[in-house]
Image (cartoon, rainbow, N blue to C red; front, side):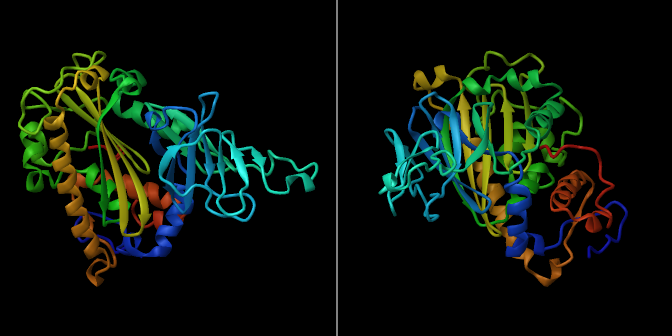
Length: 389
């Protein structure tokens, strides 16, 4: 039961148990992480046939690889014989197949069972039916998105339309040419906090004046706490020459960025685990991997024009700005995580007016979990705004 706030300008949050209870995390794994489109890897992480990477999605280990026809394929990382973990490495390359280290069942890059000891004694065995269990795959914006559900939701509605509605059109995001950008830097953060705290932090800037001096220097309006862009296509105006740690000129405007997009910062959250940050000269993509109720790994990519990488241009000033922001944010999330188990937070906290749009995220979480009785407790009446920063 959620206790109603004592003032009409305040909205209730989720209860503390939603951030610390292993049972709550298990439910979110089943009904959210394993049921939604999940941004798993960058397409460039799988450059060649036989390249692979393993990732954790909810309670499952997933194996992603590029087959010989250049298509990306995803499989549950489970041998169909006795359930052994098929691939134990995080990334690498195989020549033609994946072999289970337990009983040597071997699968092709398309998931078909290729060979197994004494297979000749099992005539007529359907090698496709006993192959690796496949997972739905889409490639978009230079990333590989997967959905573990047997009947995945519409990718267009739950992913593409969210971005288009925030920016005004699908063309607006494609202007940045994200799928042709190169990886300038990747930093992985291991955050001792619940994944929802990370999402909520990204959605609001009530905290920006307190912990983000570098960011508010570049984006002055953030100092007022109003980072939630409820107006379609509206970005924060940059107050410095470039989106860099010292405000100096950055890497040069990306070719497709329009005059209206220049010197502005746009951001959008694609539930449940992606943040996309758009600035004139580069793009920053966060992908979260919730591993436990109190642990979230965040993989952050700084994407730049391929010519910047080819020329060996120093990108450190651009990277350092958001790296500092990330570390400041994640430290704040870890501080909050400690309080989630306190008796003081058993009924949750409150959202001030500049955070009301977070209520839409809480509503989405509850609806995905199928808890209409909790939806009726007051979290339905939230502003119709996307979770954006």
